[in-house]
Image (tube, rainbow, N blue to C red; front, top):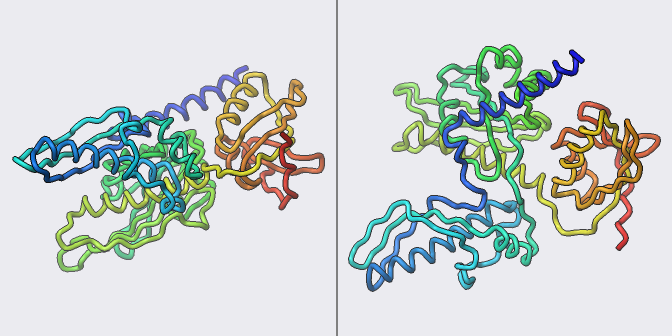
Length: 386
């Protein structure tokens, strides 16, 4: 009983740490709605200020709709997004607000924030045959790693400009929920800075366990400065997922413009990293149209409560279309899972909720991640019958 209580307390502390780290971020508690697009600039000249305002709001709502569709979809599909110039845009708009405005006799300048009707936007994308995400990601822990000049990169750089840029910029994520570690002594003990920078699996797993996060991304930046003035001249950035270290999501060099401030340049680098993380999450999550396949799998159970939670998580995955219970015992459930996409997509999906998909001598098994997760190239699952 004491061991069970200790395990529960450890889980609760991990979840509390992640929540604390997220809520500590600027603007995190009031994160914008997934279907709300902010900061749309408009500048229109017409016969009168009233006419210019009407044209500006209409064009701003259309521009926001384009931004929203790009937000919800993979970059691979952006060229195929439906045009918005002839759409009855008012059908897609839930509400709008004017953040700033300036009026002249014939000119209207403003910044708009527009909220869109989710069902209408989804219907537009669905009719165009373009897959889209329907929710934000589970929290992703981002660990900033910094290096200057020829120095070795390391995490937990005290008062480092790269970490400061993340403190300011992490809330700009739109379809992902990003959190930063606290960077306290417990973090440093669990995952030494040089180990994090090197992608040490044990260190990153320890950090993930401390915050109860399923995904850890290491965002590295090397800052190059002019030797005479110390002015920042170039930022080399990369970001890697802990569970796929050999395949960087981004590896790029950003030159700093002569008149660009250091915070602005670092903020631009943060935005590039956020974009790479979000595009990666969208590619993992999107399910394209195709036949639904069936897979029979055994799932070990600790108790009824664990089954209720796992079933809720499975049915919440966009790749999974159905979960049928074929047999249920005290320690195991046998399921038939209907899923879209291929088996690697299904495996990646269940990994997001802490499970691994493995083929063994007696068939397929869903097990807690960390068990035998590797699986051979299997024969395709049978298509579902109507």
